[in-house]
Image 1: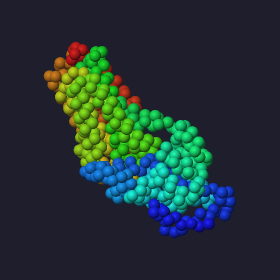
Image 2: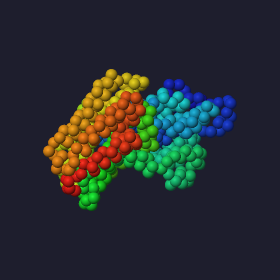
Image 3: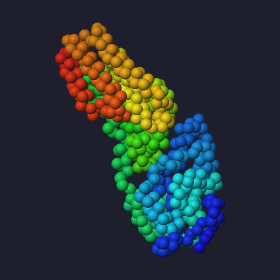
Image 4: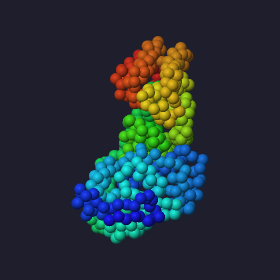
Length: 505
């Protein structure tokens, strides 16, 4: 039998042949299979993906979104798809379901895409995945979801004339009018509901629980960077002061929650680049294990929790956290694309943690420590960019992660980073020669032995980066590097031998 789909929500240049493949007689008994897109065939939601791309590329038109939304969800989707194009070829596909669909199509079964996404998105999907006979999708006037989708499919295939693959409660209306349900990655409660309204043909379950993906997205291992908050405490030799330690711990928790929120925002704005990256493509958002909507909620909760915790420390510390959030948003949404300025901002963000330790504990941070920290973190930020550029040497010229650097900048970045590292050592040498050191140490000459240790560590880090042995984050690399621990231990011994004059410093 042959039929032509005449639904206004469907685009097809040639008639659809619904005749089963002659070598697969068993498929003749199977009705056409209609497959949902967002959350079903894809691990993500294309509407949120379009929204993120739009906000990243055209942030000045944010009020247009409100005006479009007032004219209805269908119009909203239409306008988004007109203003930005989604890179559908890199979207995370649910591979087990795709393999099942390919097998069914190879055996002669008719497969259709039935999505609430705009028709332009559907057309892109059909171009990327050439197994569908055609599609049903939203247009300027109709949002093809729920009962509306059921009406369109029933009009084309007849009552109970199709099977449907979906993933959420929004698909219950369609399943109720289908000949069979394919349930994808859903909860046990939804499964019980589906079983009551339609025969369940197949189930594709989630591999991991949502909580696991949320924890992975928070990147708790990155919290080690926030130990910089304890530097004023250590520098003033007050590590046994219970009140000061308690305040520093609260500040540490606040900055850590804020950092996790920042990583989530960064991942939302860098989805396309992360999916093209050999390592970052496994992150929960890039891989589709976590939806953009869930990530937005996660970032909101983490920011709120960070500010609430900071309020337990002091008003000044809360203001600093607010400034940190504002600066990180500026970095994520634009500053990271400006060479040199991006690493200065990163260095400033690390130094802000040290200053946060002062506001939390009330222990003043000397200008020497702030200056030393700024040069060290500038060197490490440049080291990170250098490692990224080295990794891109065999990639395309555009593979710079949206940071604004070119492969030709590699040598210049190395020169600037090495110079910043040695300037940090020079600042430490000048500090030893200053009158300020006599306030803290009885035998400051022991501190001179710290200088060759710092020179060794800085030179070795850049040497490893030049060999291509440095990871993308040199600070995390340091926490896993045995020579770094050895250098740190020897520096601590030398600080002890130098003899602090008093616990207050």
